[in-house]
Length: 184
Image 1 (tube, rainbow, N blue to C red):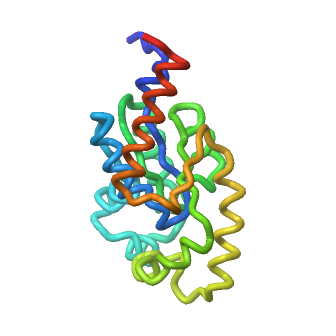
Image 2: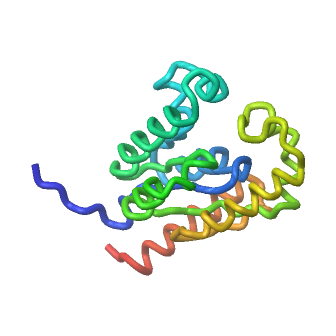
């Protein structure tokens, strides 16, 4: 079977960023606005194991989680017309970064530390990585990951946007970019 490369308009959009930056919430709305299907890699991992992420980590360990994550990222990024939300740690793996950057349009949901701190109380319960961490340790993790997230095709500062207006802005920006860079 012949396989043609996807045009920029067909490539899946891969949402990356620190946990709690809005990748899933905004990603779902963005998918709707662009008439695409939405895929949350963490949800797909939970379906594959039949368990929530904290239990996957405690029963099977991070290695098994990361292997399944990589497998799913590879499979979904090769499909056209999706909006894919990655877990906060997925893009830290070099192989995942290469897969995403070569197969999709990587969109970094950038959030400031001050804005993120306001969300921490709703994040710690179901994020194994944040359990028992001090705010200083969380900030160090946040800063370290920002460097990795800088490898992207586009960056969007989420601080001043509610989810619906963020999705609208991103959809309009992507459509404009496609019209400028890849007219039909």
